[in-house]
Image (tube, rainbow, N blue to C red; front, side, top):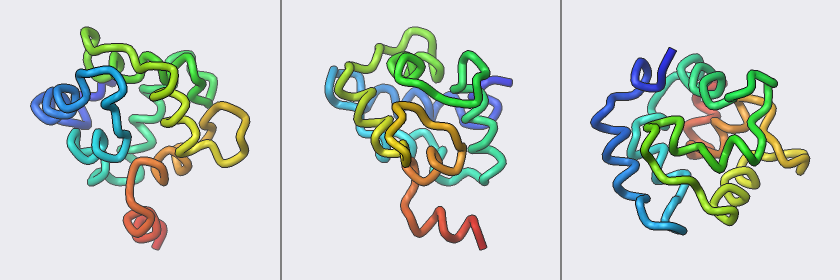
Length: 119
């Protein structure tokens, strides 16, 4: 499965263009622009599986550096600062990796949207 089976190619392109410059990546803005923040919990779970490049059940810092390239192969690599910021947004236990699709979903979307999904 590819990300374009969940998100439109046009939305992905738009989101990537908004963060082309180094240090311009904002995870909440990116996920809103690409449409992920409006997806169901199941769709977000599928995205988590796609982003978990080594199928370890976790998304580690090394995977986050190439995060944008998972959306489009010719996208830029995140800077160390951007990757660390993205991880810290969803890393509830400070182990340097994301181990739950709910944790990443919480980081990507507003708390209110997350709570609604749990109802």
